Amino acid sequence: MTTADWQIVWFTVWVAALSTLTILPVGLALAFALARGNWPGKSIVETFVTLPLVMPPVATGLILLTVLGKHGLGGLIDFRIVFTWRAVLLALSVMSLPLLVRSARTAFEEVNPRLEQIARTLGAGGWRVFFTITVPLAARGIVGGMLLAFARALGEFGATIMVAGNIPGKTQTISLGIFENVTIGQNAQAYHLLGASVVLAFIAVWTSEFFLRRKKTA
Amino acid sequence: MSLLLKKISLPLAHFTLEVNLEMRQRVTAVFGPSGAGKTSLLDLIAGLRRAESAFIQLDDRVLTDTAKNFSVATHRRGIGYVPQDLALFPHLSVRQNLFYGRKSGETTGPLFSFEHVIKVLEIEPLISRGVTELSGGEKQRVALARALLASPRLLLLDEPLASLDAPLKEKIIPYLARIREEFQIPMLCVTHDRFVALTLADEIVVLMGGRVMQTGPVSEVFTRPANAAVAKFVGVETLQPGKIMSVADGLATVNVGSATLTALAPPTDSRDVFVCIRGEEVILQRDVATASSVRNRLSARVLSLRPEGALVRVELDAGFPLFALVTRPACAELELHESSSVTVLIKAPAIHLVPR
Image 1 (spheres, chains in turn red, orange):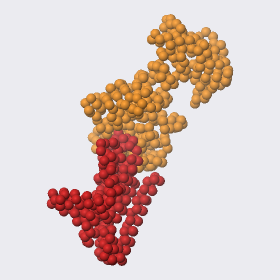
Image 2 (cartoon, chains in turn green, orange):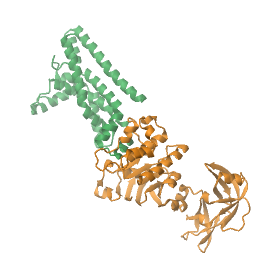
Image 3 (cartoon, each protein chain N blue to C red):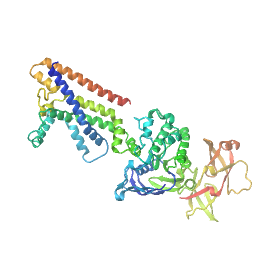
C-alpha cells in the first residue's frame, strides 16, 4: 500500500463515518415519524426515502448534480459543493439514508408504545421519553442500521462519481480508486484497495449482524 | 377528591363510550366485563387518548375540555397510571424504574417519601435487581411504587390483579389496601374482579358496553343491582325470572319456577321481574324449622357442591335453581351431599326484585 492508497482508505472511512453521523438525526426523525402515527403524505415520504435504494445510483447522482450544479441551487449560493469532498459527503448521505431509516423504523415499531405512554404519566415530556425510553429500546436496530449505512457509504460509486467526480487526493474514495486503477491498468494498486475494502466491509457488516442478532435473541 | 367526567364520547370498535359521572369517594372501582371500555376511560383521564367530546376536571383543575380545544399534556396532569401489563421499563433496573418519575427540581418536594413507599410495598430487597428478574407479584409492587413516587394526585389502576394467579392475588390485595390507608391517595381502579371491588372501593361505577349502568356505594350496587345485566355481572348467585302475583303492605308474592317467595315489593308496576338472591343470604337447615321471622322457607334438594376457598357453593333445586354459599364446617355439619334434602331459609329483604 502506498501513501496515496492509505490516503484513499482514510478519506473513505472518514467521509463514510461523517455521512453516517450526518444522517443520524434526520434518519431517526424520519424513522420515528414513519413508525408512529398516520399523517398525510406519509406514503409519499416513505417512497422518496426508499428511492435511492432502488434507483440507479448514477441517476441519483445526476439529480444531485443538476440540483446543486451551476444551473441549480449551486448557481444561487456562493458555496461550492459539486466536485468537492462535500459532494462526496452528500452523495454518501443520500445513498445510505434509506438503510438507516428502514432499520430504525422497524426497531421503533417494535417498541411497545404503552411504555412511552406510561413514561409520560410519570412526568416525562416528549423529548425525555424519546431519549430515555424509545431510543434505548430501539438501540440495537438503530446501531445495526448505522453500520449498514456506513457499509453502504464505504462502497458508494455511481452517485459519488457523478456529483463529486474522481479527483485523486480530493474526492477519490476506495471504489473510485479501484475503478481508476483498473482503467489505467494499475492492477496491483487496485488489488490493494480491493483488499482494504473487503476488510472494511466485513467489519461493518459483521458488526451490524452482531447487533441485529443480539436484538433477536434479547 | 372530586373527578368530574362530563359529556365523554369516544367511539370504540363496537360501541361509543359515553360517560357522565362525578366521583367523590377516595377509592372508586370502575367495574365491568372485558371490552366494556374501562381501559379507554382510564386512557382518557390520563390524557393518552383524545375523545370526540370530553370535559374532565380533577378537583379544581380542568384537564380536558374539547369544547374549548383545551387539554393538559399527559406529563403535566399529575395522574399516576399502573396499566394492566405494568409497563416496567425493561432496559432499566428496578431502582431506575422507581426513580423515573421522581421530580428533582421541584420546590414542593415529593408527596410520599421514597423510604415510606419502599417500606409499605416491601421493595427494599428488589431494588438492585433487573426488571426481568422479578416475579409477577414483585413487578406489580414495583409498578405501584413507581407510580406513587411520581407524586400523583390521582392513581389509576387498570385491572391490578388480572395478570396474577389466585394465590398471588391474595398477596397483592393487602398491598393495595395499604396504599389506600397509608398514602390517602384517591384511586380509580378498573376491575372485573368483584373481590377487588369489594375489598378496595368506597364507590362502584358499573360500566357495560361503554355506558354507566349504575353508580353507588359498594354494598348498594352488589345487593341492589339496577338491572338484570348488572345483577348477572356483579355476581348475584341466583338470578331467575319470576312473576309478581300480588303486592300487599309493601311485600310482594312472587312465583319463581314452582316456588312462591315473599320479597320486598320493587318500586315499579312491572309484574315480570328478575329475582336476585345472593348466595350468602341463603340459609340451609337440616331439621324442619320451628317458628321464625324468616318469610321464605322452602324444601330443596342438593344438586351439586363446589368448594370455593373457605366456602362451598351449593346448587339447589328449590322449585327453581338456587345457589347458596356456606362455610366448609357448616357443610360438613349438615352432612350435605348430592341429593340430600334440606330446608332453605331466605329473609324477604334478601330477595331483590329487578324489573325485566
